[in-house]
Each structure stands twice: as structure tokens, then as C-alpha cells.
Length: 308
Image 1 (cartoon, rainbow, N blue to C red):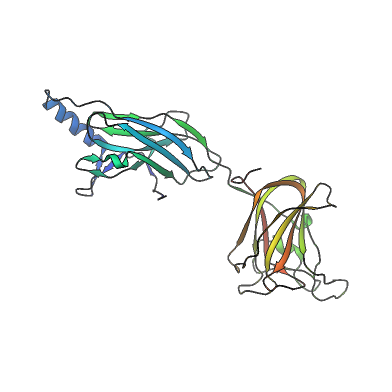
Image 2: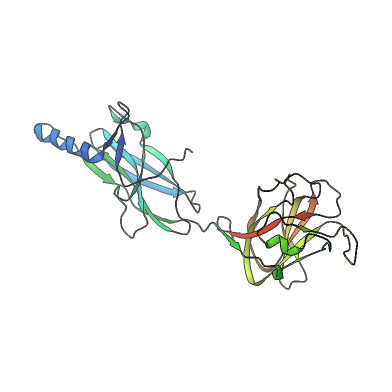
């Protein structure tokens, strides 16, 4: 569906004849002068429009459907939807988005039934929306529908004391680098077998312990290098625990070819999982059969667009 740019409270109609913007006020004034000079002609009735539904609501946009059910006996001058965040009925003096093409015959019937995407909305915000329609007799509105945008992503702050790793190389790549916000640093699992840094086969994990139960619906990670490495992660799963000892796998990714930094790799789970204890496990690497792995940064988030 084509996304239309949102415009605010300057109610205008596009004329396909000269591509100029004609304000609704000027059209309305012209029609009043015309009808007053032609007393023997009837101007018709107001048009009828219905706000059908609001669907596909996310954190930043929503799809609104509407229809003009009657032109009131005269040509359609404007059709669209208007909305507000105030506790009032929305009007075209608030925010509006027009639909249809204005022609010498007005907006044609093919454009009377429509769906339009409202973009640039604010997450976790209450909105009211309704359709509008204008003909030569004036302006009318459809029913008002209220909706609330979703929460979007909430990132959980991670600190070094909250995370542990399955193995840790002693010569480089401390776990603190996973959460320092610096893409030039990195964490590395054990590869040397020196001073107790035992090399272990995959899977490797990063264990996160929150102070209380949190929801996680996905995570971002960045590779160590700006070029591909065979030890870059290529498949994950997520485990949760009720006691921090026994863990259960709740989600597993497919294999993928990780993007290299500075690009982030974002993995979304099938839902938001709640726990105090999480393990993000690296099941496989870019080159299969590796004994160790590495990452630059790790972020976890609750995703308000996913079920709970």
C-alpha cells in the first residue's frame, strides 16, 4: 500500500487541471456565491461518508479505511481522513490526509472506497480518527474511531555484572565489551586453553540475570569485524529459567549470514518471553565446526509489536 505523507490542518484540494493548491475555504466561498446567484438551482445535500475500520496498528502508523456512500447530488470536492490526539472529535483543522484525484468532474467514484496509511504517529498514544467528505453543499464527517498505537521496542539496560559467558578468553575480548556501547571492542570465547581458559565446543552462551522478571522479544548483535569471519554467529536460540540453574529452550533461529559491523543484526522472537534469567546461545558460526566465537555488542529488547 502506498504510504502518503502526513500534512497538518491546511485543508487543500489538488486540481489536476493546473496542479495548483486550492483551499477548501476558497472553494466553499465560490460555491456559496454561485448558489446565491442561482436561486432557482438547488445545491443538493451534504455527502455521506463512513469510517470503516482502523487496522495494521503499529507503534508509528495505522491503516484507516473509509467510504463515501453518497455524493449528496453534487460532485465530490474532497475526501480523506482526519485525526487528533485530543479528547475531541477530529476535524480537518487538526490533522488530515486526503485521498483521490480532483478532476473537472470532482473526485470520481473509483476513489470513494479507500484505505490510507497514517504515518509518523507516536508510540503508546491514543488517537481519534474519522473520515471526511466535501461536496458543493459543504463538509460532513463519518463516525469517530479511537485506537492506541503500540509500544514499539523497549531496550533493557545491560551492565557487566548482569552477564556471564560460557567460556572466556583471558588474553582478549572480556565480557564487559558486549555492553560498553563501543563497536571497536569485542567479546571472545576461550580459544587459547591458557591459564584455565578452557576451549569448549558450541553452543556458547551469554547469560543475562535481571533483578526481576523482564520481557524479551528480540535482540541486536554486532560482529567483531568490518569483514566477515568464520567465527561470526550464524544461528541462535534463547533459553529461560525459573531458578537460574535449569534452562528451557523457547525459541530457535534459522541459520543466517550475519551482516558485518557497523550494521546491526536484529533477531525477533515469535513472542515476548518473561523471565529473570535468559541465555542467548550461539548454536553455529558462519563457518560450521568452529570451537569459539565472538561479538562486538549485544542488546536485548521487549517488542510491543509481538504477542505476550
